[in-house]
Image (cartoon, rainbow, N blue to C red):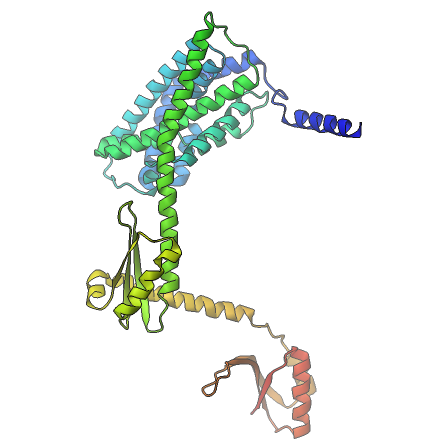
Length: 439
């Protein structure tokens, strides 16, 4: 009996917490709002053109802030959600209207962006633009979950900040502008990759809308022929599979490359540790046939037997198929840019400086005891206090650290006073090893 009550309580709690009908707007109002935003005439069309130009400038300047601004004012979510709503309610007039408006918006967006990139004198592809040409499975997840958040927000009585967030997360504008860049500059790989990313975002926002609309049980237009409904469902499933498969393949390649590069860097860092030889540059060239790890060294040249021994350890780092290329001596001088040598030396110095700084931070901070010392020893003129490292030059003993105190008196201290001073300083500074120097 108690178990049944507990289960009922948990069921009631979960239903009340996760009920999408809570604060749901009127069904007809939601349909009118999404349908209205699906239109691309007048203000919506001009807003799209302005947003495309802003996003293109942001990509051109490599400015994340400008690109985010363009995504916030973009009206592209409207027709995509319209298509999803139409499929979810079997309203194929709305589906046709949404598809027609989305195609119109896409063509106008690409044309606007292409014209901008054709005119602008700055045609270098920077990181913000290049990040939009290789879609992965992660983009599918982002579009799907972003679309879910967007349609849930669109069906509420009180609109939240979720829709602007979805516009940023799913990033419809940048790939559209990147496609325009590829068209304007003749980089058709960029054009196809960006267009595919845009297609992924559009389709999975649409699918998310369809799922939420069905989950919330919006009233559907009934089919005269049940077979037609099954046929439409099969079409939707086919589109999902066709869209996902290439992204899975691309994701596998990117993840495999990332793991290879990480293992290669770890291999070089752990294997090339020599006192008189330094790694000045490492190039990891990944491809599916013969991946290469190209290492350039300066300093004392390594014997071939040592290099062979290092190469035999590639298997330990899951780099069995990799080819190790070691450049040293004349070969290294031919391959290395002098600026790389400077950079490598600077990095080494910075690492040492960082280590020294960390050691200093670990050192205890000594209190200001000048007034106490002056009260105890009126003849004291000055003192200095700090940690000192004792370097051992003979035997097997390791270096040690002690607290060094140098005091200057106007008159010499007697031996008993010196012993008292040492004991007082040891207790006051809470340190075991003190070296006292009197001047």
